[in-house]
Image (tube, rainbow, N blue to C red):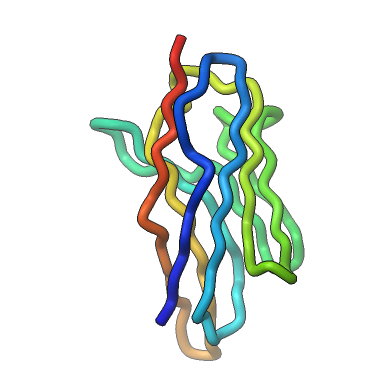
Length: 119
């Protein structure tokens, strides 16, 4: 059974930092990429950052220069270091893992962790 367990969310003042973690287990196919998405109340889910199996990263425009995505292969864990947090970063943050076979890709999602930034 595939499990993605997120942690590290919480309440922080503007300008502060948080580090999110996503530990995965049970994925039997190769992983193509991992990503963090977020969804604020009343808004669509958006990509925050992604990292490929080869280590290439991509960031949403609103978080460039403030957030850093990384992976620890030995621990099957992905991280999102968030610095310089702003009230507009308030959202539920979701971990995503995309694995693949020769015939299809598979997306797995965590349950989400709330990040709230106060002004």
